[in-house]
Every structure is written in C-alpha cells, then in structure tokens.
Length: 427
Image (cartoon, rainbow, N blue to C red; front, side):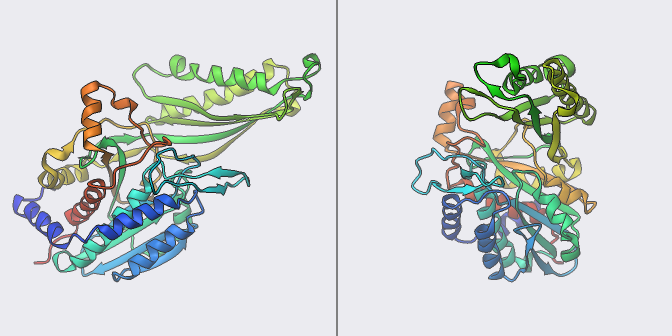
C-alpha cells in the first residue's frame, strides 16, 4: 500500500499540529535513566507509564506478565495498530558521568547485588512512546481505528513478550493487525532506518553446569578440574562458526560468563557457563545448538568426568528472528521518506535479538521494527571522517548514552507517523 503524497503531507501536518511539549518527556527520560529497573522488576517504571496514560483517556491494564502495561484507545471503526516499547535495564555499571547517570544496585534473581543501567536505550523507548501516546490522543479527530500501546517487561531476558501472552494479553485487549516497534542504535541522532526482511537474529541462551572432583590445589592428580574443562569448552566453542557453519552465513556463539571456585588453593567441584547463540537461519541455528551440546559433553568425557556427573545444559530463554514484513516496510518507507527526508538512512541488519515479534505472530499480525539514532551529530560526523564509528559506544556499553535531543523528538515523531500510516483518516 503506497499512500498518496497528499496523505503523506497530511501526516506531517498532524504531527506538527499535535506534537506535545517534549520537556516533560525529557524529564521522564532522565528519571527513568537515573532509576533503572532490572528485568522483571519494572515496578516504578510501569507505574509512571500507567499514571501517564490514564491522563490521556487510555484504558489501561497493568501487571500483565509481571509489570507489563497495555493501553487501549478506541476511536471508531478501523484497524487495530499496536505500538511497543520495552522498559527493563541491564546489569551493568554506568560509566557515562552524566548528571542523571544511574548509581543503583539491585539484587538479581540469584540474590546477588549487581549494578543496573539503561545501556540499551529502553528509557528512550518508554519516554518516546509516552510522547507519541499524548500526540495520538490529541489527534483523534484526524484518525479512526483502535490504538494499542504495550510497555513490555523483561525484553533483555527475551521473556517479557511471551510472559504477557501467557498472562492472557489478547483476552484483555483487541488483537492487532499491525505491530510496530523501534529501537535506538549507534546511529546519528535525528536519523531513522527501516529495512525489509532480516533485521535481528534468533537467539537462545543456555546455562551449562560442569561437574568435576574438587580437592586441594596441590594435588590436581586426585581431582577432575572443572576450570580446565570449562576453558577447553570456551575455546572449542569458537570453532563451531569457523568450521561448522557455511562461510557467509551469520552465526554467533558467545560465552557471557564463566564462574567457579573461591580460593587459589582449592580446585572446585563445579563450574557454570552462560552461553548465547544467534543466527537468522533455523537450520543453522539447530546445527549450532547441537554442536554446543556435543562439545560440552565430549570435553567432559575427555577429562574423565564419570557418567553420573554428566554436564547439565539448560536453555534459559529463546526468541525468534525479527523478519520485517516487506509490504508494511514498503508503506512505511513512503511515509517515513516523506516525513524524514534525507534523515531516512540505510543500515545493515544487526546481530542482536528481540522478542517483540511474538506479540505479532500470536495475533496473526504483520510487524516491523525500525531503528533510530542517538549519537550526537558532531561526534558521529567526526567518527565517520576518522573512520572510527565502531569505536563509539554501542548498545550494552557502560558508556552508551543517547543525546536527549533531537533523539527523543525523532522517536516521538517516528512512532506517531508509523501509527498514523495505518490508522485511516476520517472521511
């Protein structure tokens, strides 16, 4: 569906007319950034969201799949469009030195005190969707249909979308026909990128427990050292992509943590690894997962681990690849191109992963996620000139800090334009 130029111009007029004062949303952004909440602990963030949406006439549902929030604005007959933002932060110590930087620590699921930081821009996502919510509420005379907003918990653990679905999300709200989301990335602020097909990889995470025989550090011959086994496993896992995946196909195996022992003179009796696997192709993904299991078990056997102490491999979460709908992208590229002009840029697919597509597939809906930039324009242009863009802080870096403006304004406008693209204007 290609919208006529007159309608594209009308979208621009609507956004310009109803765009709210963004200062309150900048305040919300800084507050959420300063007070981040870990996956599954988004109590204060969800309360801010729910209270704000109620002011603008949305029917608000809270505590879905944890601290998930769903809001509905019915505005006559027409399609149902769902917009999603994620709310959770990461277990990371912030090093940005911003005046509103996080200095929080929280207990994770294991009861361990860890630092917490919005290092992936979810604070930007929340604030911008709230701004778009006000804009679209104010513009109800210029569109018809039903608008659904989802503020999702636990995206970083790739579990929040499924948790909301399992908690009866679509028993509480209308099922959408179109699902849209956006993500801030290491791009020049003010820019937006949208692409059809592959955008983000499928991802699985695993917890691996290796068992050995503990003992005194002076007598390794009486032990089976799980640290040596773990080191061999981590090294060998890196041969999967280089030796078992067709060259040119994307696959990534990452060991995110390795933990064992508490003292230099004790050989421990177990070791824990956490692993992640990412790919686009389902066949390759299955091959990589099978190779991980084979290597872990074989290294344990080679070290003499007895059969009754075989390693335990547990899949901790899983998410499908994000494959943007081509027709929806084609339509959005028309409206985004008209609205953003030269700031609509081209980017490559990312190797990161998301679970938002589950909100669409569960409803039989088409979906698209686009990206927008958060890097200061002068910093970006200097990095491009010096060919050091890859050295700029990216998502999940302790230095990741999108500039507030025009990042927030761009994200508010993109969400509003995206929704209005599919919510028809009244006759």
